[in-house]
Amino acid sequence: MLFVPANVVTSNVTLFNLRMVHPTEREKANVMKIKPKLVIMTHSSGTRTAFKFLEKIKSSGLKTDLVFSIDPVKEAHHAFEEVSTQQMGQAAHNLIETLPFVELKERKPLRFWSRQQPKSLYKPSNTKKWVNVYQMSDTEGIKMNPKFGIYGSPISNAYKNYFVKDGLKGDARGGIASHPDILKFLKQNLLSL
Image (tube, rainbow, N blue to C red; front, side, top):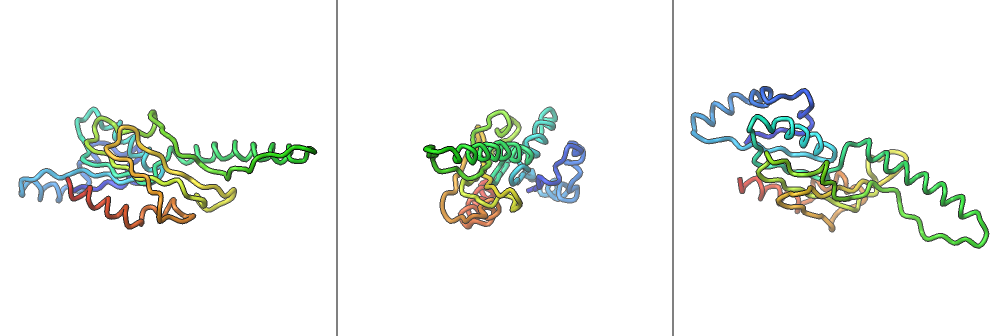
């Protein structure tokens, strides 16, 4: 299998670069008369990077056998956009609370919310199988101020969207990648290729 970590899949990567990643492995596969499997693994906004790469190489006819995404989100700057509007809402909430005889409902914590994003988080046609895992329990996000949780999202048209509800703590954003159920799920999907 040829693994392409999303952090090396940049806009500068071309199909030629991908074919040259591991020429000795390709040669071994040819001698053994097997076709290597192309697997891309992603986390967080690396999923958008992988998606952009897959769209870019679509015309080449190259297909990935498996994309395994963990807690995907759009690019990181969208998290800051979403949270900043929530912060403005909290400022208005604080002002309204100063008015006599006004009782407001409990505030929701700052979050980058999970949602279907069919125009930015979907399985491209040159992907045979896309498996995705995500959570909605993170409270620590990227661990900087302002503190806010980041929830992963489902992938439109994925073979499987696996929502992890149990066994995660406040640092679920990173913790999901080492969750025993996720590691087992990843292994099952790799062995099924």
